[in-house]
Image (cartoon, rainbow, N blue to C red; front, side, top):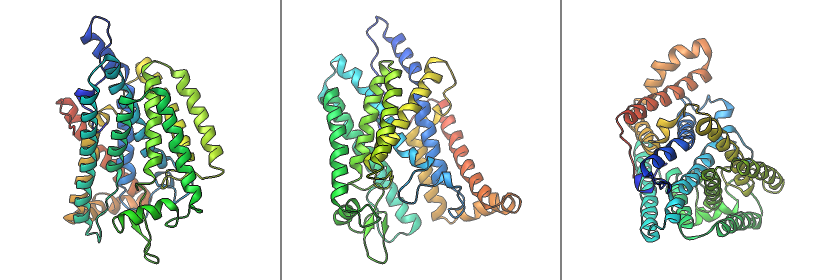
Length: 378
């Protein structure tokens, strides 16, 4: 994941053979790299269609309330951030490593991820000739969640982490309820974000001037809960407790559906019901990947994306902004895809073909990097 390097790899077990333990640890959790990689690949797929007017419904976010497969991608990534923290940091704590040093590393790394997100938005401002600079973003949220949950992993026990998880859900749910409505632009999360950030949000309502950002500051409370759930799931994983992963997933899904009767599933607001629903699904998917890859030896498809997640996500964004800025994106799509695919198969197939090709280009990039043992970390 972005922000974890060899300094924060899982510590070897005390079995008298440090090298062997490190190799077994790496092999045991190949599922996490694979799952992270497939999640990043899915991000690239849904973020880069050839034509935003012709995207298959499952590859789009729900317009507001509701849920599509695409709405699982970002919480899945943050869940894996939490899992990775558990695998990387908790053994170090148990071994007695200096928590102050680890805390500084976590905070610096989180700040770097956030800073990279801000830099990407500078490039987006230039490429798309936007009227306003957007402050929140995907990497910004990842950086904040990584730093906050990393510090909790270093300085709190399991019970405190569960209390923090419950407190985040209850407090955020109460805040949303106190706002009186969950409708776009007028919900309390959007109102607070707009009051703090002004025009520097993702979307402004031209009729009212109100703003909204799907990665806003307030809804990050829900994202923190998702990452904390991943932290606890990572601890179950490293202890080999698949049964708890499956049961916790079922309970979270049921609780999320029940809560959605009061506060709907909503990715834009990252509602508590959405936290529980997606967290439960993530638990099940993690358990499945662990069973198939780590225990049964299935190939870790997606691993090359997973070990170079930062290169794939940030690099693909820079590439997109360059294509847009130099006026190459539309001619590329029209000549290489739409001109011959649309007459034969329709515009939706052409749009999807471009998205798949975009992912394949970056799959080749990260595959070459992996073959040469080149891993970009920040």
